[in-house]
Amino acid sequence: MSGHEPPQHVVRAAQRAVEWIADGRAGKGFTDTGEQRAHQLAERRSVPDADIKKMQQYFARHEVDRDAEGFHRGDAGYPSPGRVAWDAWGGDAGREWVGREKFRDL
Image (cartoon, rainbow, N blue to C red; front, side):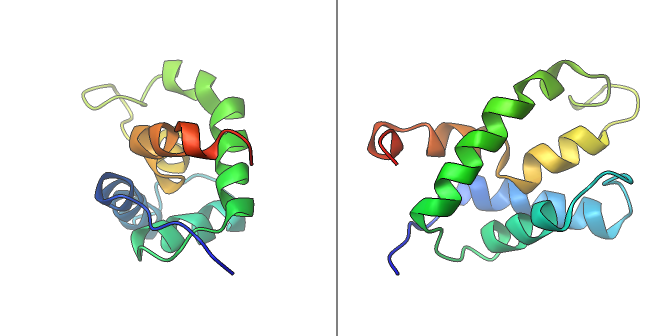
C-alpha cells in the first residue's frame, strides 16, 4: 500500500498532541481513532489515501472548534480538548497538507 509521508509541521503538531494526551488533557470525548492518528503522524508513519480522506473529513467537521475557548495559546483552559484533538489530526499544518491540490480527488 502506498502512502504519503507527513510533513514535519504535521509531525510536530501530532507530537504535541501525544504529550497532551499523556497529560490527560484530551477530555472524556477523545476517541481511540484520534489517539491512533496522533501516533501515526507523530511517528511520521506513511498515511494512506484512505486516511488522508478521513483527515479531510475531520477538518471539515471540526473547523468550528477553532472558535472555542482554550483553543488558542494564551486562552484560558489552553489546550482545550478540541485543541488536543485538532493537533492529534495534524493541527493547522495537517489541514493545509490534506487540503493540497494533489489530494483533492481522493
